[in-house]
Amino acid sequence: MYICKNDVVQVIAGDDKGTRGKVIRVLRAENKVVVEGVNRVYRHLKPSRKNPQGGRLSKEMPVDVSNVMLIDPVLNVPTRVGVRSLPDGTKELYSKKSKTRLRVLKKPKVAAAKP
Image (cartoon, rainbow, N blue to C red; front, side, top):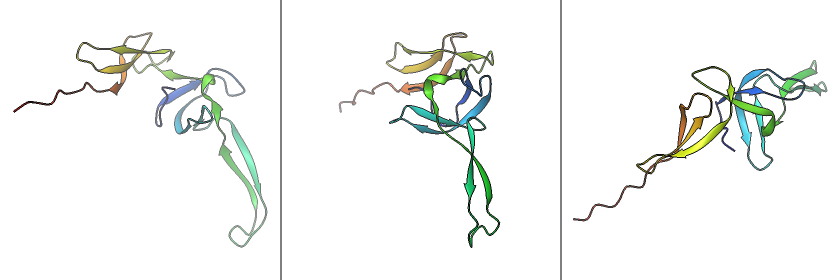
């Protein structure tokens, strides 16, 4: 899974299809992400000392990662992503549409200098 916290994604399937938002949380074990403003549900609260009136609390629920796509920063459209290795040994995540770098995944190993 190449989606991280604070990435901007667009929902491509489901009730919120076409909605863009920032990733709030990534649940790797469940293969889900929580996106700001997407898949909102209401949690009904009983009156208590802390909340004497009670009411409804709106919160975001997790969405499967297969239902979101990263946004290409250059073209501002949803894009598939790939991993490529550079000659210096760096691995980077790149956009398939504009071929631009999204983030560095692995930095090159630096050989220990011999004295």
